[in-house]
Length: 82
Figure: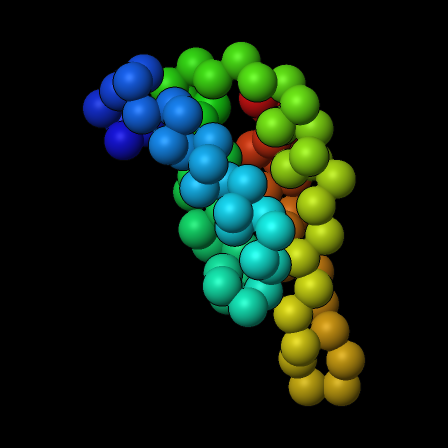
């Protein structure tokens, strides 16, 4: 959607972003979907600075052998650009 520059999908992407942000690692392993949604919102020109601020603060901890690791670095970088 982001590559097609469909501005009319911004409300649906914002809804998806908020849902993925709330569900965390249970729904989005590796923070892949959340990062892709943020990238699409940035690409289509979304100007919702509060959404991008939430993404910049997000920590996405996932279990790994011996503890846990944060997988949201790409998301925070994408949101910083937004």
